[in-house]
Length: 196
Image 1 (cartoon, rainbow, N blue to C red):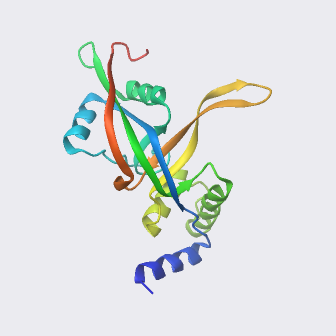
Image 2 (image 1 turned 135 degrees about the vertical axis):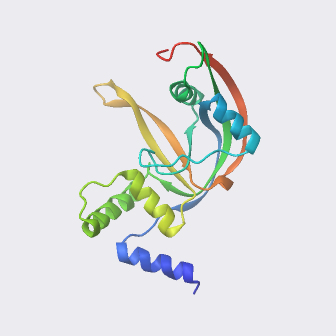
């Protein structure tokens, strides 16, 4: 047995989790990434996206996309862009993404893996609160079996009281750059007032 596979099996047994990242044969043709102009120039020059890292990343380290929502990517780009002498330029990219081995947090069984891991790590580390991003990074780096993570992000207040309907958006966090099949710049614009 391959030592990496054996190590992963032992690691899963140690944390008593069954990793359920499935190898999806699903291509997302309309994933949108918004950013500031300087970052966009780097993306175009290097022909790849920079991985966002740190505890504050919603789904851990990765490249973030809004699934099927150019508007949310544009809103994100506007928020990210800094004012430069009265005008700021932002850019939106459209990408084609292969989900590959996806930890899909829109599915109950995948959420249960995260909850079980949180419980096991809390016991081992004696910490009560562990960020979801830290749990996802742990799974990604410990077992190297996650290509993408997909989840809903609640982007606002409740829209209707009965039934309870919230405005949500699907977010994709790409862990492995090779899952980004292709991308193109599709929009750029200026903002003059960061409050827009």
